[in-house]
Length: 326
Ligand code: CP
Image 1 (cartoon, protein in one colour):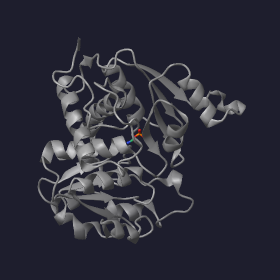
Image 2 (cartoon, rainbow, N blue to C red; image 1 turned 90 degrees about the vertical axis):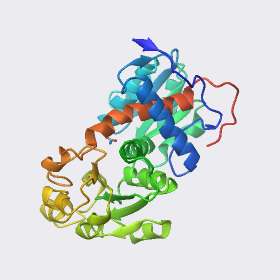
Image 3 (cartoon, protein in one colour; image 1 turned 180 degrees about the vertical axis):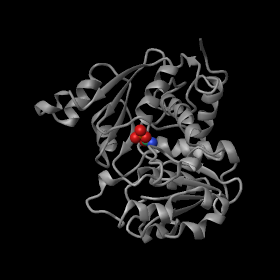
Image 4 (spheres, rainbow, N blue to C red; image 1 turned 120 degrees about the vertical axis):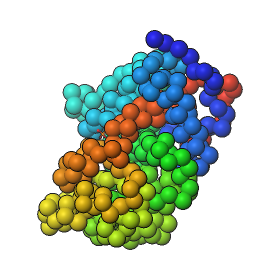
């Protein structure tokens, strides 16, 4: 069944960006607008299930140069639930193998009359580069270890949905901080909204320089756990590492896996998040991943609402032409 948005029919003038490249450059008000718009879409679509028609006639192109389950599916569903058409591009099987450049490939897809591209790429800065070459909106769906803004937003939205105000809460990001775009996007978003962020993991995967930007750095999960309101458990990204950052997965799990024993030493309402994919038994045990405090699948559902908000704010109808920045 199709319906219209109940209140907000045009993109608010407070949103001036054509692209969503990162959370680092957004203001706290812009992040709040994204979160409020997410809440509006979640409600208007009955928990991301119903279809609206606010992007009817628009076409969104998914350009994925790296594997994805959640982000790609979620952007596709979000676009369709707003009434837009979706084009799915995969590097495998494309004319990139015939020597066509990345920019030429993107320009050819743009020439087919699309309204925005959603791009995932292993190279940091790729969405930014595309935004300089295309005349349509560019949305970063994860660029190497740099940022994953919609993942950061959906994590933050999921926490806000449970806890309300984020001011003063403590969120620990645990694991492979060095290679995590999710950690970076969460850091910028959470700190702008007044939360405290702890980066916790082995010294080889957590730089002490994060402290210069205001994060607490820890290598001892058991020591910080009693102070945490939320844990966001990050996968070890072996595919981005040239050498092993710790002696064995077993040792890593012994020191950093969130398990029932550790849960017993945490606040009783501690929230467990993970961006996925999760490796059960490495960063989190199966019983904790599936426990009532786990938001892991709520995050996935909320991801659709976040992406509806992002697509609508970047491509939706405007009451007047707004000054586009970024
Ligand atoms: N969290 C996340 O980005 O998952 P995918 O790699 O499956 O998209």
